[in-house]
Image (cartoon, rainbow, N blue to C red; front, side, top):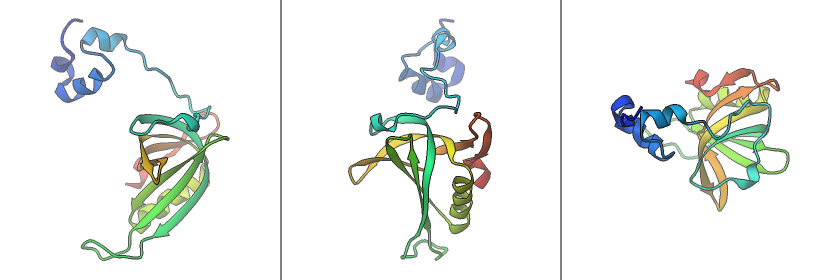
Length: 154
């Protein structure tokens, strides 16, 4: 239990645990997550801090697709941007995904069909407001059952 965590899980994983002040195997076994997300409640979006990792439970209240007018890259095809608006019922948070049209279309279908999800990513900032860009996500029903996710579109 007193063995350094780096010896058990590798230096890269141990470094991530060091942010939680977990340095030994015993400390890792005794560590409890700060919060368990069941997916049946929403997260207060008004208290997000820029440059922090978050796991949010929120409702999708808007979905818009935008096509870039300029064409870049080898493929010479336009790229698209999907803007999803999340809400906790009081505050809103924009979430942005960039991709090829067929992937953006897939994500648009997911967010249009399923309006409740868990989103995990780093809070960034755009024009002075918090936002998420390309978070991992799963869409869930009101009982917390997973009904769709980002990995399916890759």
